[in-house]
Amino acid sequence: MTGNKLLFTPGPLTTSDTVKQAMLRDLGSRDAEFLAVVSQIRRRLLELGHVADGRYEAVLMQGSGTFAIESVLSSVIPRNGKLLVAINGAYGHRMAKIANVLDIPCQTVVFEEGSPVVVDRVRSALVADPAITHVGVIHCETSTGILNPVAELGQTVRELARIFIVDAMSSFGGIPIDIAANKIDFLISSANKCIPGVPGFAFVLARRDLLEAAAGCARSLSLDLHAQWKGLESDGQFRFTPPTHALLAFRQALEELEKEGGIEGRAARYSANQQALMQAMTALGFDAYLAPEYQSHIITSFRFPAHSRFEFAAFYRRLSDLGFVIYPGKVSNADCFRIGTIGHIFPQDIQALVAAIRRVLDEMQIDSAHAAVYA
Ligand SMILES: Cc1ncc(COP(=O)(O)O)c(C=O)c1O
Image 1 (cartoon, protein in one colour):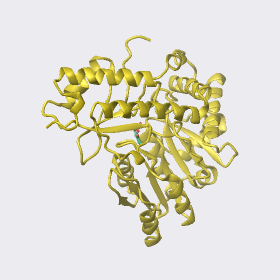
Image 2: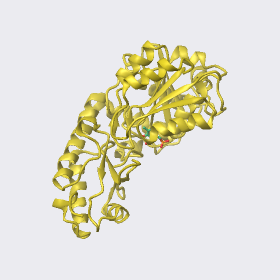
Image 3: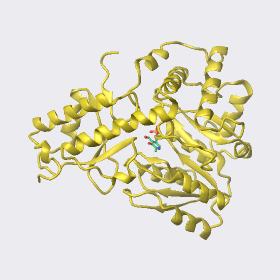
Image 4: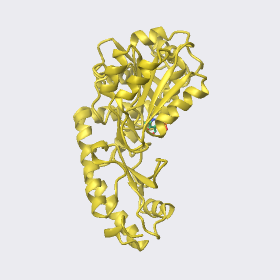
């Protein structure tokens, strides 16, 4: 399809032509064909999380990823509950903010943005405060691209008999995650990330018994996770207008994931994308914000070149004019921009992006070979 720029962002992402074509249809929200689409998507999501054995349920929720996080927090933490959020970036802060807005008692353990959550500090916080009932963490903190140790955290949270909520918005579908083995009770992701459909809904993979226990607990009508699940279970329908086109696109995106070899196959491509990016950007003189051992293949933060002629807005605009959309930074302690390596993009697209970056640096008269060291 013409006129589309390539998106090197955390989402919405570049989608395949076939995903875009799949939504060029109108379907009735109560029509049998549409209900079959919803049911297929729910089943496939459970399979991708290795939890299709009846212990977990897939609940689809209209809105962006944040709506689904808000749905989980507002629906499953009881009135006498308390949330602990382990934070090492902007999305962790957002989770705590949602709890604050909802008047849910919330404690935080805050780490440097450039380093992962430390499991022992979470353990100490849980041991110190028996009132904490739920623990939230971000799997891939998309603000930097860092990965947090969800497997170790899950073991600790379960051992201490708390409930584990994981925001896997930018990682589910692009990094293998065994939800049950990692003791994740609620996993949240959305339709326009590593399984690149189009925006319109998010989803929660939730332990069935905990969903049952959330009956009547919600602080919101439209975001009531339990009621949404019951609606989907009883007649296969959404309670309120569903994003029919986004669901059609997502079903196609799931088929394309399957064809690529499932999450493992997808992860291999995203990893090849990220390696190609790192190599080429390093050759151009750019410094990554994260130490290599913490860097995921989802998104990479690069420091601004220390060059007096570098100006991000102009850099961004020139790249966009050439058809390449990158993303501003989101760390509080360094000037960075981000380049995502997920979506329907391939190593050759990365090469094209880096060629465009080289051209823009030349136009801005920034010596690309020394971009990171010239003041
Ligand atoms: C880890 C994480 N959590 C939450 C969100 C918020 O999702 P949305 O912008 O779809 O509401 C994002 C978006 O990129 C994210 O990466």
